[in-house]
Length: 408
Image (cartoon, rainbow, N blue to C red; front, side, top):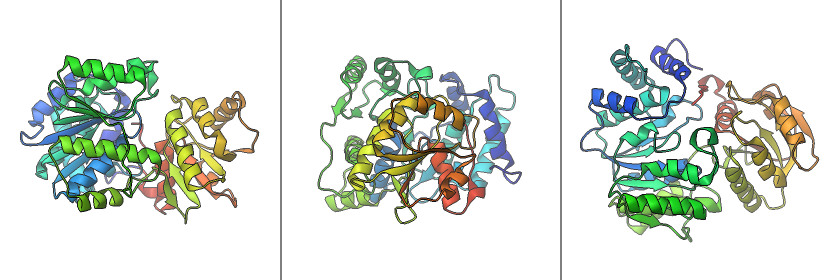
């Protein structure tokens, strides 16, 4: 949790009461006031439903291997806010966060409407990247694309990962509508890289790219015969997408450096193994991500089932996630995470009851700690939300006091 020793970060968390306000007017105003971004800074902008974080991690590792000073902006964090803003050397420090936010707080003190949590976080990141003298920044969208604060930036390359049904209340209730929002990051004459998509999604991307005269590069096969630091067949697709985007940005790596970069990449909370493989953490929070998780589990642990520790945000397709995880479940352990967005365990049980799922034991736990303490000889899988995974990481790594709960 945030404490009195971090008053500016505490103020930033309080701005979450303003909610998520999609639109670019306020962020343009904020960046103009700060004279951001730096004129010599170049960007790779990433949108999509699933695979954004992993694709960003692959690209960042490649740029680092090419001795390029590159920043990385992602969300949400898992344990500490600092994870959102980093370069090839380190994360932003607590002291740098406090100093940067103090400057922002003075600038926006009398603004109406007040900048949102995400807008301020983006401004903090770009200001830090400028201070660090970075050449490149990999920028992950927060929500959608067209009206996301990160879309105030004009990149050298746009990347759109796999698009699925998620955040439907904000982005639309069909793949076509969601694709339209994600395609909003496509800029005139800026190349855009994507992978295999549903036909209706690809039709939207092709239409928007053509209208904006943006070259559209479609990756149609995954990387093979190269060891990756992240597990799962889907990561081979993410790695290929990342490689194509880096090449479009004009960066070329010798084969030996490329292989090194792909092997060394790490991204916590994506099929992450802990306790000698006894506990697996994966932030799968929508049906498509959960289906991919199941395929990876069956590949890594063939024939095994899992005791699944599960919690989810209220606004997610929880029935769809439960149905996707059903093939590998031996027992459910429903719990919550520290956020008002977390769905109560009784509601999770009710949703499970209304689904046509196999009859396995279900236990409700008042918190994640008690769920993790549940004795079992079987492997455990913690899944359903990145917020849950972050809390689990803090507990399992013995630093629960480090966990910073967030709504966004």
